[in-house]
Image (cartoon, rainbow, N blue to C red; front, side):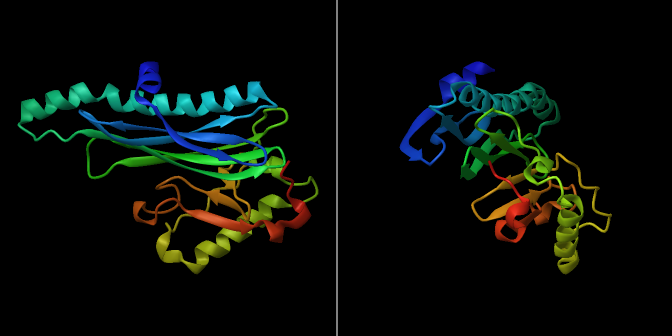
Length: 224
């Protein structure tokens, strides 16, 4: 599947520069049995080439896994359409991304990976990437806070309050226990805790996001 990444991507001319990391946008249009537009960031880290390669490979491999999932089912689906006299509808792939916090040796961004392989609607999975640019280590949610801060209770209470204020948008099930590696991303203003589609809310809600202002966390959060 690597040929899809190397052959189908073209370079957008804009070059985006930030204080810690620069990146360009790679984009590609798919046509035929699989349709869609894919856009992904490609990072440049002059002071830490191994981390640059590592993070770019993570994004590349996640995208290749998406392509493999989609293409692996296309032949069987075409056979099913032919045998049952169904109209063939092309499969689809798409990505979208947001680069959030990008300074002080900390990079946080996410990519939404969408696929349609038949059915009522497609499905999107969000993957966030949070890394210390000095040593290249992944930064879990628990790593963001100073040791003496009771972050589990704080974050749980914040999310519970948001859900209680908009109960119609969420399932009635109890909120899952907060884990050290709960999915999140950071922007210049917020720590954003998010959940996957269907995890705590119906599809119509989209990705449930809970934005905690960084200024409220103050010195309890460490972004470097």
